[in-house]
Image 1 (cartoon, rainbow, N blue to C red):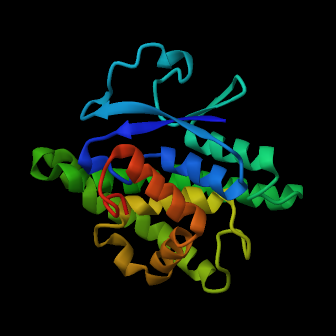
Image 2 (cartoon, rainbow, N blue to C red):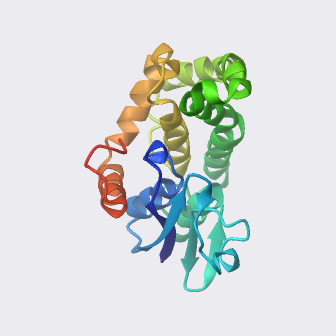
Length: 220
């Protein structure tokens, strides 16, 4: 399977990009894959003529499974799980819980975690984003205590088993890993670190750093 991923990035994006999600899932599921590297500058993808035939919005990641293209990181995670029969339960109700938490990660958490990251990266150069930061933190405060309470009695979002929903949530939480937000929620931070300690994630992050040509630990 081909995975369209980044081979160069501005330093402020190291470790945050969504190609990590796709390759983490592939590694966990044991599916062979080949990264196809794309260059990214401060304003987005460099001249990659023809990539719009793969990804109509010219966004990374995208996967090519013997000619069948899937884009959008959430759809890719579910496709990989369904194809491999791993990281997702076989019964409908169990699968619904995976869908629920994956969508929660992308629809309820990331719309607020990502602007916080941008506000921190841009600082005083974007006073509008900086001014909205406290509101975004407040909104996350409506979700995080509930997730923390749930994680008291189970290691992962849907129970005892790691799923693609945990890949989505962990990668979203990584957007907050260098600021104060998660420090208020120690169980959620423990959850993130527990997921990141999985061998598949460690391997993918090392390969990600190697592909970008950056020092070990720069994307952690």
